[in-house]
Structures are given as structure tokens and as C-alpha cells.
Length: 337
Image 1: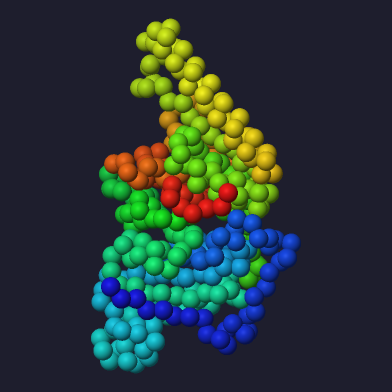
Image 2 (image 1 turned 90 degrees about the vertical axis):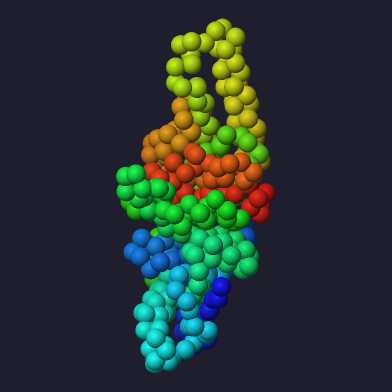
């Protein structure tokens, strides 16, 4: 596999010096987002998410890499060859792609940031995962879309394959969806007010919890912790014996106790926290509550990588029907406390 890199020119950097709003910058958790990878296919859906990569990079003083993956063979120095040289060697199709990357690099939202582009050759999901690992990416931003009826997977084959194996937090979104990043020129605002943290209290969600709390503290957001108790097949209570009824009550008491622990942890971190215990399937409860509270962001752990379904049934279903961006956090992600 080969890849080429295109860097913002020194002249461009001199014309657009890095500008930060001191009142919005602090060395909190976002400072860990030092390298943000923006995977793009140049679609309007993908372009709409560029502002998220730029906003987190600007807030943390980090850098942004734009990545486009092509299945066709690429020439050496694909982003450095002249357009004439490309055309003479049968790579006319690459001229347009390179112009797309150059145009995106010059988008106003990236001005003043350390930003560059990469063009990779191979299977998209595999190349995205490779770059995440090789370039020490701390946040991946990518778009996804819901496919048609009976088409699998419903969240897009590339997104699904990436999310099942990625080692860093990944922000995914698709329209229509609530926005929490706004920009005017090169100035960006991260407007996180309500953050929904869906949890089953399993240790694999600890990284997601830490990231949810850190983001909430950094941006003054309130965290609503959500846990759903799903009674098997929906008719279990009608057939339950007294002892089984007690078992359900025990599950709820345990959940309440875990929420008390989370509330104490949030208070110690200076984070506003509210607990919500619901009945029903986790993904249905997550989608319903996200709409009810008008959540700006859903944060979820992506499941046990040793299981047969790494992404997790509930996380996949939430992404299919999401009404706001979703931040998927793998259990082995390195996040702050």
C-alpha cells in the first residue's frame, strides 16, 4: 500500500496565523486530541463534518489530517506531480481528486491550523485503520449513511468495518442531525450543552465514561447517564414468580447503586450529572431519550473486542437511527481520567 501527503504551504500558513480565543482554550481533556484524522470521500455529507475536526483541533492546539482512500493504483509522489505529468501518464482522474483535497485544505474553517492531506491506496476501512495506528491518531471523524431496506450493513460498510476495529474515539454523524459545532470564518464554537452517556456499567464502557465526563467539564455540558433494564422478551413479568420479581428488583437496585457511584464521580470532577433508569432495549431507550432531551452528543462504549460482535448490537442500532452525532469509544482507547 502507498500513500502520499500534501501539506499546507508555508505561504498559506503565514497568511493565516493560528488564532485562538483564550476564553475557550484550556489544557483539559481536549488537549489529548492532538492528532485528528478526517476521513473523507468529498461528498457533501462528509464535507459537513470538517468543522468538527477543525473545532476540536483548534480548541486543543492539535493538527488535522485529511485522508482520502482510492482503490485504484496511485503513482509515486501522487500529490507532488504536476497535472501535466499526471495526464501524460494516464492519471487524469487523479487531477480532480487532488484538486478536491487542495480545495478542502483551503477551507476557511482550517485556516491557521496545522493541516495536511493524505491520499492512500487500498481498501478504505483497512487504510483508515492503518493510518489511525501508524500516525497515532487521537480522534477519528467520519460520516456515515443509512443504506436502503435489506441492504447490509445499514450504517455503511466502511464505517462499520472501521468502528469494529478502531483504537481511538470516533465521531460519526449524518444528516439530518443536530449540530454542536458552529463556525464563522476560521472561528469555531463547540456548543456542547447536553451529553447523553449510555452505559451498561460493564468495564468496557469505562473509557467512554471518562471521555464523556472530560468533555462535559471542558465545555460546561450536563451529562445524562442512561441505563436500560430489558426484561427478556417483554412478557417476562407476566410469567414471573415472586423470586423472579425479586431478581428484577435486585437488578434495578444494583443499577441505582452504580448511578450513585457515577454521580459521586461526576461531582468530584465538577460535572453536572443526572441519572435515568429506563425499561426496554438499550438502543431504543438511547434514541428516545436523546430526542427527549435534545442531546447534542451521544457517547457510547463499543463493546468487548473479544466477543463475537465487537461493535455491539445496541451501538450499531443507535448509529443507524441517530438524531445527533455519536462518539464511539473503544475499551482500549487511551483517554484521560
